[in-house]
Length: 610
Image (cartoon, rainbow, N blue to C red; front, side, top):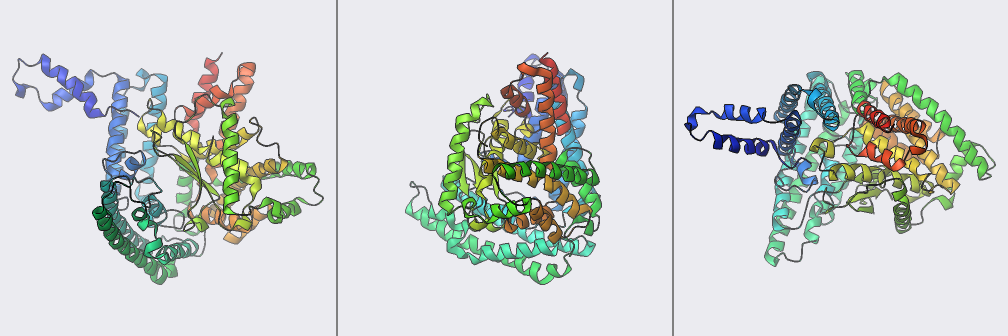
């Protein structure tokens, strides 16, 4: 993080200028002239850092949740807007102004690291402006909510005392009440956005909206006492007075009642009005303007100019390769039957299913200890932030993926959290424990996200930002590090790794099948069952995720293949001089780079090693 914002950098120079010019009348030196003089005294690198710092500070004001996740409470009483025309106009204006300011700088005068930052910043701004074009906005803002994304899925945990919002002081509790009011406004504005889509003919799917209706009904059905919004009142800090506890409990009860009323308005609108006009076809190919939307999403998530047909065929070839390796493990364990029968054996045999939530939790605790003992062989820099292991809350687990990661704070005061899914235990397969932990926990998302945000030498947008191809590509690449760490000695855990790799390869096929080739939900689910040991519950959740967030699932395999290719280039070029700890440091120490920028950086590093 650049600790010194633009105002301080310029302010220091202004003080020096003022002392030299003190003999002149103050009016003789305008503020604009002083600022210009101050900027002239700065190097290109200083100007770049000042731009980054101002951009970050301005962004935190417009998007206060981002500040709160960093542990910055300056705007803690604000949830933000995120959905109005005014918000989108302000975001677009900021992107345009910051890109213009960047292009005024002389890139040739920057050092190597700053050139990387320049290139990433420029690409980010250019891609964001495409997203704010009328063509894309007309296809996106009118679909503000589905079962996988939307404030109704994020906010309950965030405001429960278990998420990113702090609950240590009376002010923390009062700030949360203020955010509740804005949360209700966002929900009502979402209804307005949906109505715009009804008028323009750009609508969500019946599938995703039906799931949202169920989610809202489930949250309302919890009742006040069991609602996550009331949870902070059951865990007051010890130093709170009885008066404050009573007052806040009463206020939280009233606020939660208002939130439930907002949920009911959204529920009733979606069920009684919107569901009827929602589209039957689940893929973007069935939506007005869907082909344009999908190509833009591919460009965003993969950070490469790839076409859906190419990605689809790449996925088919990867599925074929992985199935061959699966056959080898089937033979190794002495299973007498077809691969499909082996899949069914893994799905149904009791030895591969957890007996309880507690036993599944312990398995992940044990895996964490094994990784901790070996991780120094692959990494020379470890995160300061601790990693906690938790199951999803039972109120939301049904619609969650098999696992996920929530980042901690840069100072380590709030840990990173690896969440795993304990819903429908008979459908959970323990052969995937190793690979899931490596991906979502350490050294996957926890290392990448924590090391970036703990690196104060980077500008904030590189510490806290990123792209899906890098973030998910690194996590998928991390699964393979279980081999040099000796974590895949059990053939069933190796098969679990291949099964997870198969999942990412199938995603290339299924996501493009759904959104560019007209596949149905049922065809996509069956493809995943035919080519892996996934249970139907997991396969269904995966497919419905791809329907809700098109192209996001493509980035895993595209990013991982890029990092694997770069590692192979480094091993071939450096031979005995290759050190995995140095390679991983190079990949991680500048944050989440677009794939093209990462390729240039690693190849320059290889050349510098002689």
